[in-house]
Image (cartoon, rainbow, N blue to C red; front, side, top):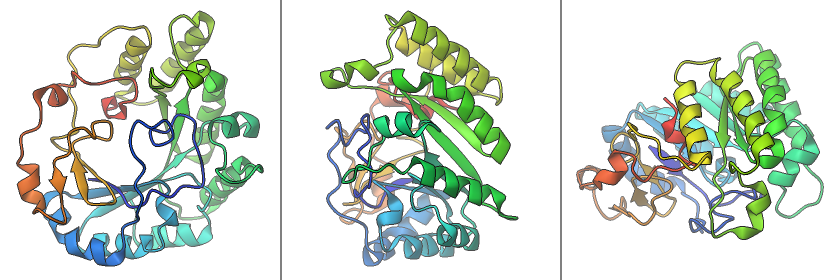
Length: 300
């Protein structure tokens, strides 16, 4: 279960589906009393909860919710922008045996990273702070399993190989995720990955194939992503969203997928989760007919 426990975030990432208006940003955070109401239902249906947001560490109840999840036997992972990934966060993560910390970071170059991931209400960037937090985390004798999620647009293709080296040196995993820019968001056309940018896409293919060679299953994901960029429709795909994985919003709304909030299943505060999960999901979702470049679920 992917669970967005807050809509708050320090950053205003250019490609974020909240910033582009693809999805409405949650206007509330999950409190401990709300989590207590549904945590057993989640544990009865899932074995792993992945907290996201917004920035989940901005939710003041976050570690209490993690404690609840671990108490009922759920494995826990979370996504963060890395700004608050300090000693206290690391200690809490180790204490609760967090399975994975996913950190969004698009470039080691502050100028490039902050052009894609600017602070919402400040001019001073935080890339150096995030890198320092990650380095300090890796230097600990016992540190959390970390995956860097690098979202790639035209402007940071050259950042992929340095990020690969950085992750290798620190012992981190890396997910290279080409960004999907909605067609209606024309102000971001300069960021859009498209086959007409032949030199850039050639460099992207080379870098992604180098990344794909490091782990099983990533070559298929890379080939599918590149097909989408070249305007081709991949075949033989399947999707775990809506069958094995679901997305729970901060207001309790349950969806089969991050990107299909037109398919609201119901609300977990109003209807038992098991009942909601038994509802029929459209066939085109299960067979990935609605898949697009932004679907990280294509990664095995």
